[in-house]
Image 1: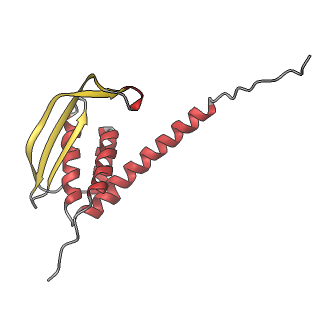
Image 2: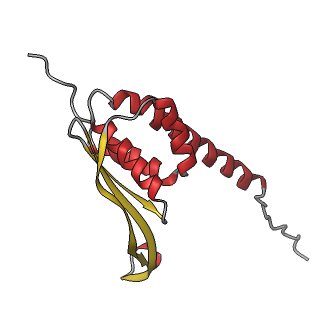
Image 3: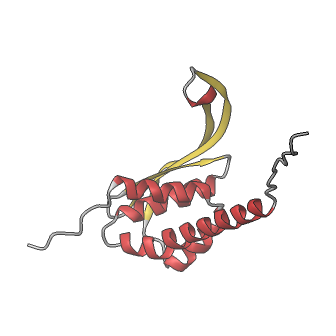
Length: 154
């Protein structure tokens, strides 16, 4: 009996979804074009937009308080093979939520898992790391080192 490859672990899936959440829709769609034809799927939950409450803490350890609200769009899709993908996108971008949910579902399919990693996750993660590196370099270029000169005793 041949067993299918094991399902991806949750930490790997969380890293993928984190990258998708931080990446603009145009970059996701560009990476998805390299993936090839999309698997057959249907929407389980059409993209819906709503509000979530943002909570904060002063100093990281103080009492929690309501900071405000943010608009979030969610979507769920189901592949023809049975995998279900869910996604949330900050803002009102229904297309981003839908395509992110589709990527999540494809990622869970053992036959598509490696293709999703190679064609979508790795390029987007590398682009994100490159952007962070460039921002760090730009910030470092503006750093000012202050020093104090001590006068001799009079």
